[in-house]
Amino acid sequence: MKREIDIDAYLYFGYIPNKRECSILRRIVGWLEACKDRRLAYRQMAYRQLLEKGIEAFRSAVMSMVGRSTRLHVVPLSGGYDSRLILAELLRLGLRDQVVALTFGTPKTLDYEIGGLVARKLGVRHEYINLEKTAISREGLVQTIRTGARWTFAFDAYFNSLVKMKFGSDATYWSGFMGGASAGSHLRPQPTSTWEEAKEYFVRANRFGTFQLHRSGWNPLDVLPEKPYCEKAILDFDDQLNFDIRQEDAIYNIVVGAWGDVKTPFYSQDWITFSLSLPRHYRLDRTLFVDMVVKAYPEVFSLPTKNTWGLSPTSSQWKLMTRRFAVRTWHEVCRRLLPGLAPPHPMENYIDFDRAIRERPDLRRLVSDSLESLIERKLVTWVDIKGLWHDHIAGRRRYGQALRILTSLEMNLQVNDEERTT
Image (cartoon, rainbow, N blue to C red; front, top):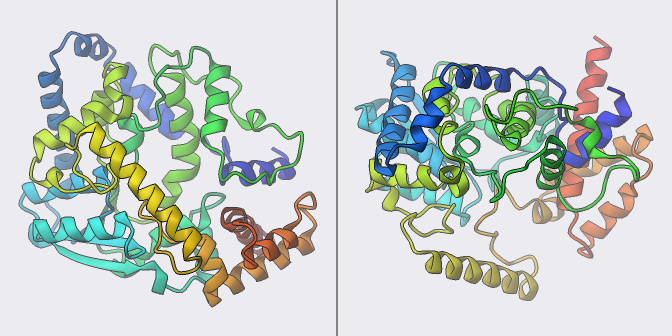
């Protein structure tokens, strides 16, 4: 693959697709081929039985990974379903004294506040990493990239690496990797019928940001696999692309990567063969998964989640729609009337990059220096990088996403430069 095409792909997706062997997809397909009859059996099974099967599969996956270790079990706890489910099961297994939950992000966001709420309600040891008060440096980003997070979302990988920095290599880390993907969070109502249709949907759904940074005429379809890995009867085309491209080339190196002893119960034979054998309509919107977690741990999942905009998963659709509208409207009003003073959006991941680039000296300096270095390389001449920077800093436009990925590009190129000179 040519270097300039790599750059276009990185600027479009935020990572480089199809750059590694499809080891995740190959393993999943192997598991599914070994239990082909299960899909037919699940079609004929009552819903309540499938719920029980799901609970059994997840608990079996966790049990097989726990072992008899007396190590500290670290659960990065967000406002979502996956990390909470892992925490609930570890507590059910009697590991409370060995468990610590950690939440990182920005105060007043749902991830940050709900993570703390859940830990308090469950009476488990809990710690925070406030990313608004955590320095971001070139050295930290470069080290994160150098140790495994190559050509993916560099800032996301750095924030996640802070968990291991805090607890070290002697702990066991539990990751929700593949949780949403296996449960069906990426599926659209109507399945794609052809490989080309699946690819077209994938490039629309996985574009990083809205501002065009790639060259005109470049086609993101060209960097995706020409043909599917296996027949659609074994695994839907949408799943194949998500697992092979997004999960392997982007997410894995962010949340698993070079962390050391990382447990991934959603990426296990027990769970995968259950979830991916379900009728497709049970995976849409993670329907069966949500019902399963509520049934297995009703008290734990009576608490608010980020997925439901701060409401309980058992809330009605009318309440969810009302809450979503209210939150969005309130945030937009605050942003327009109180520029620079508005609270972060409740759904924000990590930090508000638009504001942080303008207001934080460390991030502003890092981004500015990185953009200057990138301009000197003359590799992205089709983008007015200086114009983006000045418009953003002046508050005329919101280019935080574009500046973030351009900075990540420069960081990755610097690591490449270092490797060529050593």
